[in-house]
Image 1 (cartoon, helix red, strand yellow):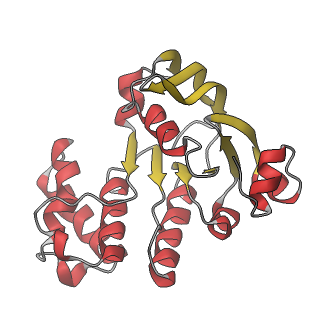
Image 2: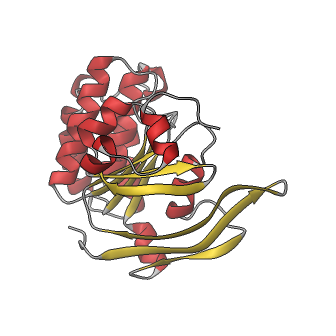
Image 3: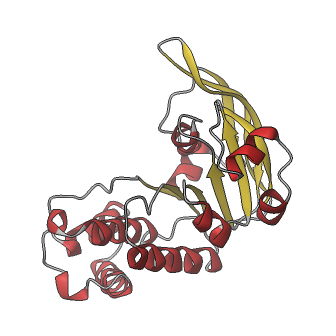
Length: 238
């Protein structure tokens, strides 16, 4: 269970590539648990923002400060990419791998693997090669592989992109269960319907900056910034 207090501060964070700022400057306090959805037009910097928070994107200037040592914070995090990365191993081996890295006892690893395989409907495919699963099955496996570690914070980059309705519904159910169990989720999505269904809080990025943030209900019913208003109206945002 994570603390509901302030957990990260971004001060003057800028990411530049080839001399161009793709993110920032950003000054932001992140606090609380629950489900935060990051919205914005293509090229707004959403994926870069997630990568900065997870500590896998080099920032050009500024700082990210955690409420606990950075190494401890990162150990309590998991990240799921838009295109799931599968180990060239079985479903069982993919689920067991993060727990093996943690050095957990074999009996506990086996029990968690069985639980999560059943949760994502892959009990009958435990010894099936993961790269040969369907797109929806691979995405559910990637999510289970992240959640099997019981992370405090889960970063998700468009986890339901290109999935059918059934797979999307199943993944959303797993994510709701994760937040109910105490995980903090920060997710990007282009699906406004999904954002409305899941979000407790919204961060709206535009041109690499946080243009608006707040409770999801307020954001969707009465956006304050021109960019957010246009985005929700389906306008082209430049």
